[in-house]
Structures are given as C-alpha cells and as structure tokens.
Image (cartoon, rainbow, N blue to C red):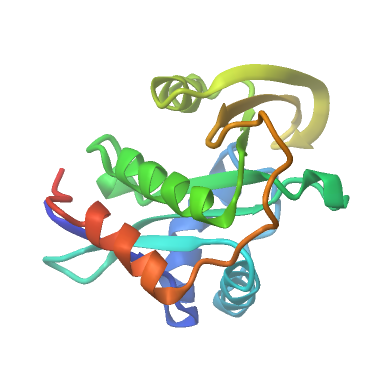
Length: 196
C-alpha cells in the first residue's frame, strides 16, 4: 500500500469523523461519549490548523483517508505553550501496517517547526498496544491519573507519556505557525517512499 501524507482540509471532515466513530462508540480509547459529526470535525480541523497541525494519510490507490494525526494545546496557561498533546487514529483496515509511525514522525517534525519542545500523549490504561507504540518512538511514561473517567460502565485511569522534541536548556523562542513552504518541505520528505 502507498500513502500520501498531507494537511487536512475541512472537506476531509466526513471521512475523519467516520474513522473516529468506532473509537468513540465501541472503545475507551477516546473519552468522548457522543460521536462528533462531519460539521463538528470540520470546525475542529479549522480550529486546529489555526495554530497547530492536522494531517491525514491518503491511500493513493483509492483516495480514502486511512488515518489522521494532530496536535493541540496541552493546557490553557501560557507557560504551557511549548508543550502540545498529540492524537493519532487509524482506520481499521489500515491498522498494523506502519502508517501510525509515518504519521507520528511527520507530526513531530511539524511540531518542531512550531517550536514545541515536549510532545504529550494521554493513553487509557490497559491500551498496551498504544503504550508500546509510543515507547518504540521514544516516549516515556511520566504519570498516571487514577479513575478519572467513566465510560462503557467502568472507571478508567489514564497514563501520560511524553517525548522531548527540542532542547529545554534555555528560554524558548515564541510559538511559530509554520509557513506553507515549511510545511510542504516536511511533507515532501515524509512522502518520499511512504508505502507500508
């Protein structure tokens, strides 16, 4: 299979929502309990792209979106501006073929352009596949919150994993919204031989 990673647009909202739906409806991977519709995802994509990155992987044979990844604010206080939380979702037919790794490495490169120093990932405890995936990519466990969510009839704890993307040895530069040419350079590198 071959894929093209590109910046998401609001026109992708219906396909992105369809990928996300089973995660909300059938699992505790997402803590949302109501499935967002395409209009809500269009709003989320637009809002995310105003400051952060939202990328999709498109199956070059079918044109279908196979997965997506984005980063967003970690916390609202200004001192947190150099940390960002990540999310990655892969459509069921494309799981386990390495697409998540391609999306994650591309997203991290875009985050470095934004001036993000720390990538943060919140994972429902018991999702060992996601923990192992992040650890393979250099993330380390940094915290656990006990029974902070309730979904599908049970209390859920979460794990926090993080990865340093840029040095934290001096005051950071201001947050940067990458230019189109900067983003395209990252995507061109990512799409050199993106087949899994």
